[in-house]
Image (cartoon, rainbow, N blue to C red; front, side, top):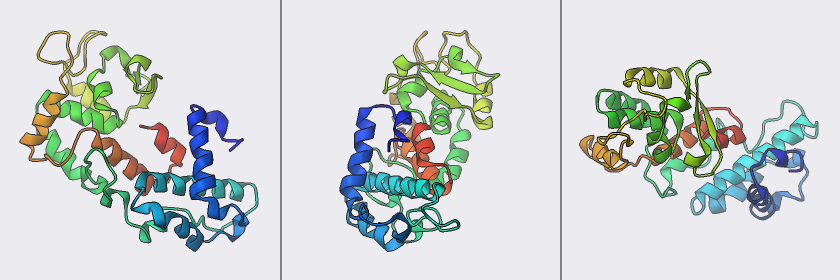
Length: 251
C-alpha cells in the first residue's frame, strides 16, 4: 500500500484499500503469501460475491494485486499462478458479475455488445452516434453529450474532457480508437466551441432524454446509457489482462 498509494487519487481511495484488505480479506492476513490457495481466496469472496458484488470484485482485484507484488519481490516462486486471478481461473468458480443484480443502472452483457453495435450503426440519427461515442469512450452521458470539437486532438488521437465537465472535477484524457475516430469523421464538422452532437436548439447539445427514446425505438427498454460503463468495466476485467488500476482509470 505504501508503494502504490502515490498513484491513488485521494485519502478516501487509500482508506478503501486498507478497509478492503483488513476487513473483507482479513482472513488472509496471517497467512504467508506463498501459502494462500484458491480455496482461501474463495472463502473470502463467496460470502459477499452475491450480496455485495461490487465490494467482492474490488476485494478480489486487490488480493490479486498484493499477490502479484509479492511474486514480483520474490516472495512467491516463479511460475506460480495467482490464486486470485479472474480470467481462466476464478471465472470458472464464481458467477459473472453481469449475472448478479448489482447495478443501479441496467446494463448489457459485454458478450452481447458486438451485435448491439451493429444494430446501432444502422441508425442514422445523431442520438445513435452519441450513444456510440458513449460506448466507445466509456464516458458518462453528460460528458459525452457535452463534447466540443476543441477537446478533440486528432493528431494525438485523444479526447480531453475538461475538469468542469467531469463528475470527479478533474480533466480526463481518453485515447481514441480507430472506431471512435471514424465516428468523428462521420459527424458534420463544426467550430472549436461547437458541440460534436448538437441538439435541436442552436448552441445547445443533444438532450439526454433522446437516449430513452432511442432505446424505446430499438426495443431495448431494459438497458440504460449509464449501464454501458458497467459493460465496459466487466469486459475489461473479464476479457482482458489489463491491471485493475488501468481498468478503473479508463472510465
